[in-house]
Image (cartoon, rainbow, N blue to C red; front, side, top):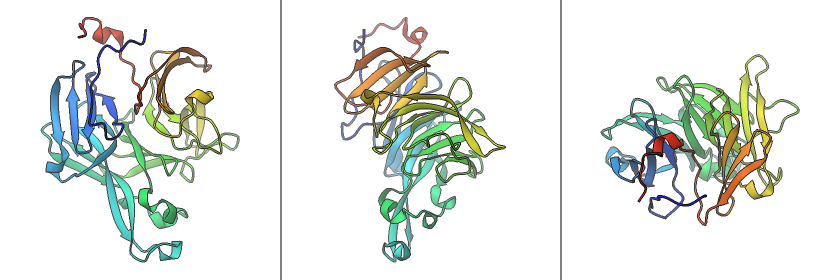
Length: 301
């Protein structure tokens, strides 16, 4: 019936990302330097203050793995000579990083995009220098390594969780590109491995393309291309160039969260037909389905 049975309020400065932990609790950024881990009654199970570990600001996404490690995205900066690209001789580029915290809040692992990519190889760097890569999703591949989505690069990277090395890149100007007859994914969000082992995302698109879609792909290593497994063009009501999510809730149905203005939450089938829909009066970073078995014995207050 789309009735609200429970809600939790954060700092209201911006829309905060959240995720479900492996034990089906909520992991969320309360503000830009606080990660909270809470149950479905809003009771705090753990809180990590990142500033005590030298991280002033997190952004966009948080993740907990099965061992209890918590990951967040950071802003990383580098001074470079951009005079040949139309910028300053001593210019600042903002990129992204990853930080991992132990359950007791200790910073135990860092990753920096500048160790693995040269901004001067990007012809648009002077235009993008204030937000070059714009990481927006961190998730885990089926082998436990890290998937990282870069909105402004229109790329997804797989990162070795032990060495920090880049295993592969897919997207525009990446190792695995789109097939000749297929549209590139653009400004993608909510990148994850779905129940079929495929790389799934909310493909936002842009003004030129004019629509968003639900896209699931697999990598073809022999052709160095990604191949579409599921490709659903969404209607205008679901078109959004910011945020968004798309995840299977069972074998045949997908939950789509599309915050064009306010959050539109829909259940669609694999042909794209809308089977259920509701619109919130607020925005949200993503929509996640909770199995009724998890909450059937809870008495909501």
